[in-house]
Image (cartoon, rainbow, N blue to C red; front, side):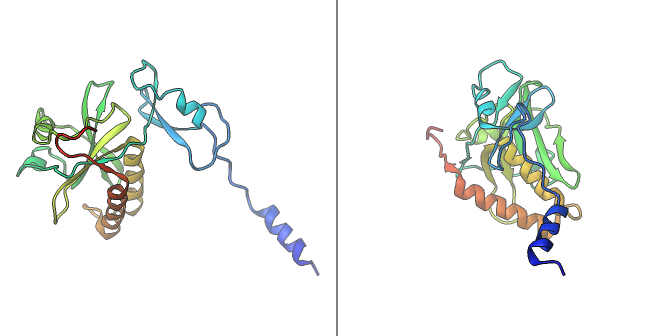
Length: 210
């Protein structure tokens, strides 16, 4: 009869060892606490080690890659005029807006069962939101976004977040999305995400430095 140690040894030998996470630039192994850069040509997020991340933190440099910062802000005075969300022609109650430096304009994405969907913003409508909300801090091009939620009850909210947080949320929602509006599980995931944002974000009011 096999001993306990022999049985455990067989189990260990038969259990595949997960492949180590590796930097997508230099291939060095790293743990889960890694950072991201954006490839401006492919619009792709890349998982990178800290030394590679630090090579691309100069947001003004003319480089193909740009480091995603770790800045979280909230805007307590944020408001949407009646009909403004409908004017933006976004079919769900959540979207994130960022400046695409390749296109030279702000683009909007919203979550759904297929992932992130781009919305063609009507000319001038997002500018009207910015005029209504002078406290909003402009996100850094390509690597930060303004994420806006318009709940069924309560006031709309807006946060400035790293772009990788937006794609993480989209991926989470895609796994639980049901029907047209996402369903109960998607709403619960959204509530959890925005609860985390509320704790993590630094409030910025009108006239306050960002």
